[in-house]
Image (cartoon, rainbow, N blue to C red):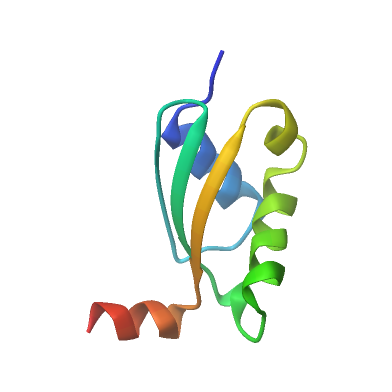
Length: 81
């Protein structure tokens, strides 16, 4: 059974402290906006690695493609202002 966007959201939230997670997708390909204080001081690659670590084996077995935008809470507030 393919995961839903809600499943992927839950997987990320279980493995990473997040202020906001929004996920959209079709069961195989997903797009996510992830806001987490864990991203502070990290570059984009390191941020993505944190998300991949949160997903663990699910990234190989269930989630076939994940496009993500990873922001710190301050970066997100700047965009929302």
